[in-house]
Image (cartoon, rainbow, N blue to C red):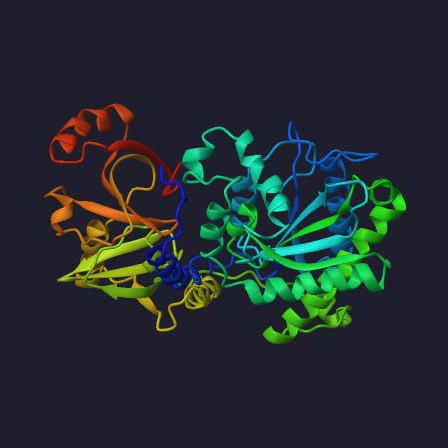
Length: 462
């Protein structure tokens, strides 16, 4: 495992370079709706802070549910609200972020409560940033929230040796951010403004800090500390029905402002009521789309002399993809369909992901002659990279080596994954762990004495 214990100039430069690779990785969208993920912090055997009336996990969930209902009622057809938890259960931090990433969320809000000496009070909203935690009083808050990972099994491997009690670890983590900082800050400022102007509460301001749950979400995100539940007055207020209602309304008002600006930028209609339909439109039967006869459409989004694995950052999250070798080049395709509307949606999705030159390839399935045979041959040659199984990790390095580099010691084929600013090199795909173990001694004798077996699921290391 690689613990971040010493931040040096080379590592900082590498992290800053890696930021640019993150921007389009999760650019694909599964719905036209605005997707909002609401995360009630803590839960289950993790109670969070102990309050004067209620524990943090309880208040977090109650406020989150109130906020979600306000948004669902107001934006019935515009916003999809997803909850990381809706009951008293424990969720690991990476699971919370994965929920947002898998849903292609447009925003992520994590709800928490603060704790300190009885006299401390006030709300504060955090975004991920590079504040100096070694001298900042905020580090105690960051340490408290990040320490939840200590309740998780295999946390050292899952979070690459991240130490929640180390300021250096947090500084290294925040260097990976933040392509979403501007939108995150805008939302955070709206939240704190509403707490002050609407609820007449004290705001401790908008701050930047290294929260793991924000770092792992590939979308604009904030962590809201509603107030200090260790303060007798504020703790009682946040546990009360009236206090929770007003708090949820303030965050909801901030969301409405943010959503309106979001709609304007995208040219979406911002009227709160949908236009009335005529009787003719209401009674008209919607025609069911039929597939285009004899046609199959694919989106070609990349041509390269290199063959990339399905999870490679160069593919920018477009998966599943089909790879065909044509002479000395590889051609990458996405989304075979016979429906014109799906074809158009697939093309827009690929372009949004960062392939503006993508185009539609039309295949004639009616032709029984040479074209059909050629297409069948190409389909037979389609190479799909495995996404599940066991692999041997042979090397972890800050340096990017190619497959022919002497550091690979003749072991091939080898591919690499960039993870937390490090290059991790893997050999082979095995259906069972037993098969991988049979090959492991051979790899070790080639010069990789520390090689070990890892399991992959859905293209990601478990």
